[in-house]
Image (tube, helix red, strand yellow):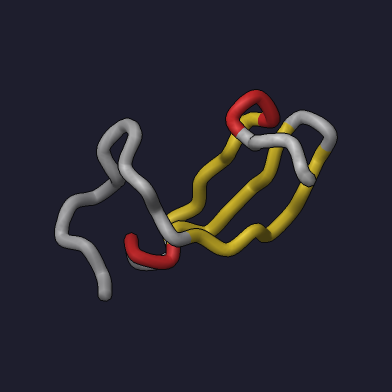
Length: 49
């Protein structure tokens, strides 16, 4: 499903695909927003385990 708004609202849960991981965060493609690109800062990623 492709959304009609250009970008998600703050705090909205979004399905995305990780394209590249760096030590400071991850670059992603927003699957539900027509493949727009985004960035998730490392502080917003929960610890594993």
